[in-house]
Image 1 (tube, rainbow, N blue to C red):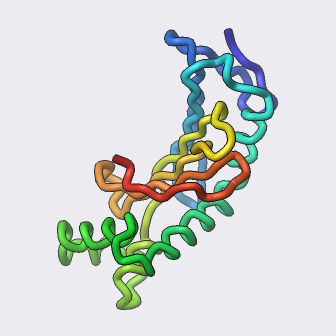
Image 2 (cartoon, rainbow, N blue to C red; image 1 turned 180 degrees about the horizontal axis):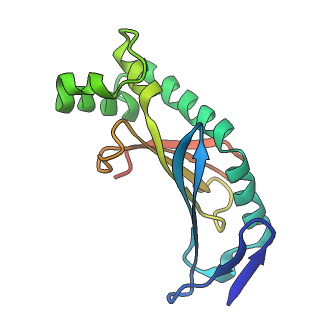
Length: 165
């Protein structure tokens, strides 16, 4: 079975009965891999696909909201965001400075400003407060084991910030 949608075109069902669609889009002059997946094709509604298309059209604004959520976590010493920054500083040492696009002297803010959005995973079957869109960030795009993830619900509200593990 395949689902046809105005934005996505034909979304084919995979061999396990789920849906998968992928495309690279530019967000702030940077390529970002966007993937739409659903484990069961029958669980995906037209409105779920419409919401996923809206997320893609709004990537820059949602990216800004995700970064705001990360900044808000800086005031919490034990937050996932502060732990990520502390770990990157410890692991990378002086080489971290080479990856910073801003170097204001406030290392935490400079790391957050320098994070690269790597992927956006869309789950059009998610409802209520489930993670509908997951934005994955890294200071080093070659280091995909050390990431921060910001999850949004279908309404575009941040529901979680985690380390992707």
